Figure (spheres, rainbow, N blue to C red):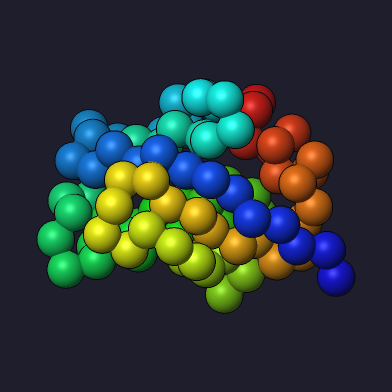
Length: 88
């Protein structure tokens, strides 16, 4: 099964969850939840899984638990498929 990692720049406390666009190799994502007690991380992973049409367990946080710069692992899709789906 293919998988890939994805670099993210995450902005918490946004009016709504949305993919903003690519900043070089990193994807900028706005998340509605505040950055308290991991709520923004949980909502980020839920949002990515839903957007990519994957089960929640397929998207995991690898690095950046308390940072705006994060790396997530996506199981079930390769990098080209992830980039294509998130660039719509």
